[in-house]
Length: 264
Image (cartoon, rainbow, N blue to C red; front, side, top):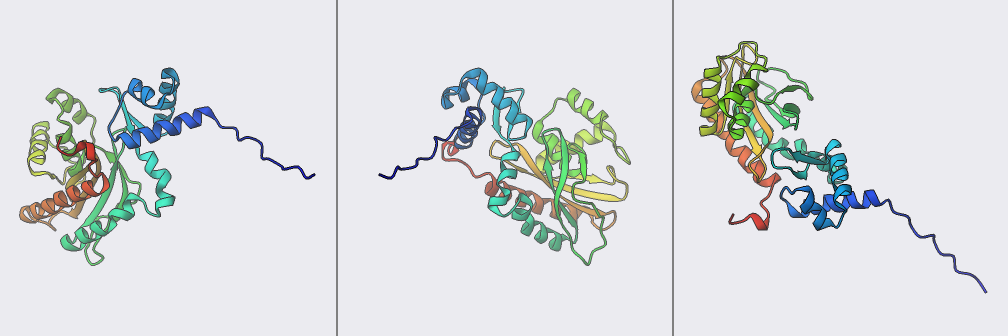
């Protein structure tokens, strides 16, 4: 009589199973949560849950908010899915960047806002007929400098003392007075776009806006970069309005509102 061969039982790695359970929970929940709430919902031991979350945060798969003591999904999860999706955020946003570049004859840059307060250039588009500034992919800038930086600062609503401290750490080719920098942040908050006219880099004018998630947190920046004299106050206002509207629409597409957030 023939015997039936059976495959040996599969062994699982409990820590990995627990980590995946935590990531799935945060994805389904859609809002930041503390360790205790995550542990209860996933039925993972509290200390084990804490250690897993700390490891996931170190790898960029979750982000820890030290003020609220909560965790949320990080950009690392999206990076893992890029191969499956067949596109990265730059690919998804690129058609809008190309439209902006053609409409305003400017270099249009897409910046990723990192958790360590840097802007990283991840995509760009330009009008081939226009004389332009050249910025290489991967270029890094301080998060609070330039046009995008003014809008980020406006969203974060720093106290004047904290803003002074952060301002003192920035490096400019033509540094503004703190009072002028502060005023430009207030203006950016009212308009939705920020301006840097030859301050971060002499001879370079920047208009910037931000893409926010559904918690209102800036996640990407989009900037128009031109040589000084290529734009006027009026044209910069038009560019700023277009950037602001575009970033709002991108935010709605990239970070759709969940059902449990509607009406809140």
